[in-house]
Length: 179
Image 1 (cartoon, helix red, strand yellow):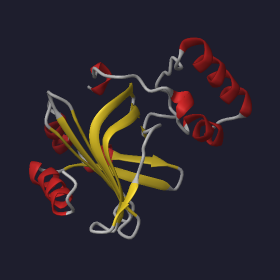
Image 2 (cartoon, one colour):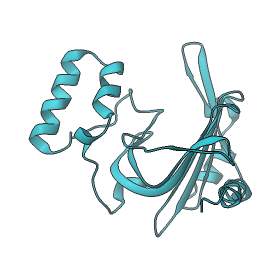
Image 3 (cartoon, one colour):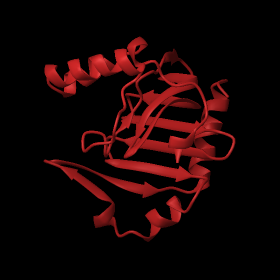
Image 4 (spheres, one colour):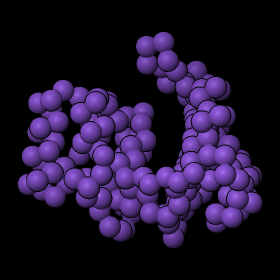
């Protein structure tokens, strides 16, 4: 997937990654991570249960867009993990965070594929459209109970959305003068 992406690696010491990592882990583990960054340039991160159902974006610069009434990031986005897949690279794309609607939308691309991900807090859905592999068909074929991820009282459902959902998102960006 994105693990084979070509491009510049992320210098995690220049991002808020350690601060976030500290908020989710104990001080000892954070110190171990900091030392690993100093020695190796970046940690030999492995996908663990901590990252399994997470998109980790350690470097993201967002600005307010009045047309969308949302925060937007355009260009190189530091992608650390996409679920179980360790990327730790900068990828081209867009991120739109609309707090009013409870949506955060991601669009990543490279020369071979595009990925659209939209997380809707109200619906508890992680909507996905990918232009590579059989991810969309695989999600369509899985029963909803098997696409539901639960952690304590919280849960969300993976949903495959059609290509048009990705086009709608890109058209919305174009309307705002972003693309």
